[in-house]
Length: 518
Image 1 (cartoon, rainbow, N blue to C red):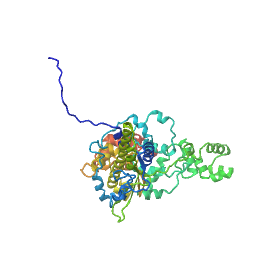
Image 2: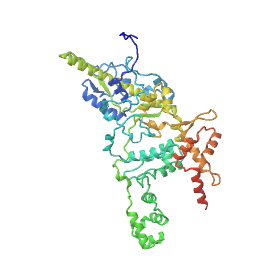
Image 3: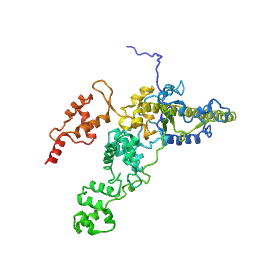
Image 4: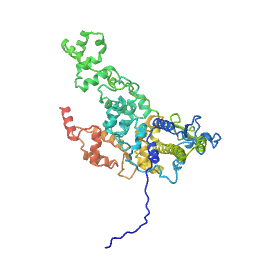
């Protein structure tokens, strides 16, 4: 076969990841506060950008741009108001259908760039997640970012971060996690729980017993004594952690007023111990930490600034969803200044620099507008699909995954993942990260509606709690019972849910209950 040279013409399509497109994608991950810091740096570096001091958004201007000194083709980036949503959930479809493309010649943001990383990421220092502590599940996932080992060496972990991490590792039920987040935010600087559990139950629409059960799990967290409601309970939790909470010690804790008054005789009488034993018990009490949170940063529950606001429509029918205009940066491109300095440019290098700054400014404005529109689409769809939670409480949380939202609004799943990272929604039931509204689902054997994972976990716990010592339920038996109720589930899934609830195996439960009978 002769070796010859020839010329071929081939046509192919490729996606070029320009720095501008990388910028637009990463803006999706920033919270409003992080975005403000980033925009401030851009304004410092780009003379054609300036703040929108009058605070009017593009929807407020109504086409009036006579002030031409600071405009971008008659538009500015600002907070998208509820007027775009109109009158509630049923009216959000208009926004969800109106995709804002950056440019017909530029790839859309809705592309799967899960592992994107470049040297330009150093410019996104503010993009580091403020709440990356427990982005794992705020489900254990770290899908949307990477951090080097060097970035973690000098970081200080505050108490809230520490507790949220344990919450993600110890509690798998999304319902109990929501309760846990609410309780974590009720801790004072000493580590004590302040507030009424009944109000938490009322806020989340769940029984007080479930809040109390979740609190009992949280009281097992590190540091020992955390989530106590009184000094006696704080000391009791620490003693229980050391396996030293016997009846005599409990009696001493119940009578701390006698210890404060140094009434030795009364203490020996109520505790049923002699003087030597009492001295040892008091020494143990003195070795405990009455303020377990002081080992961490002073600020244990920093205020979370929501990125998205939702509230009832004025007519009471549906919800209004809008971006938080108080924290959303507004920026304009000063075309008048661009025109003036363009005329004064002395050579090609200056003209190229001015043109590059204009393109950069225009791209930032468009990227910010794209980000705002995308966040509103995702948040509005989450509110629509989780309406039962907002109306009736946490027990009505619907099984939901990112793919459902992506399909409903016509975007890629990775885009939804970025939008829901580090974005908080202020609701009538509290402030939650958008990720909290996602939970797995299990199919219905009868072809009906799917069951949420937390509902199945709850049912498994109910069945095990109701078992008798002579009829312990194995995992296979649990699968059979759940199948009768229309829940399609594998044995390994039952075992995983049982272990996440910290319920021992059927063999261990049989031994434990036999010992109790004896």
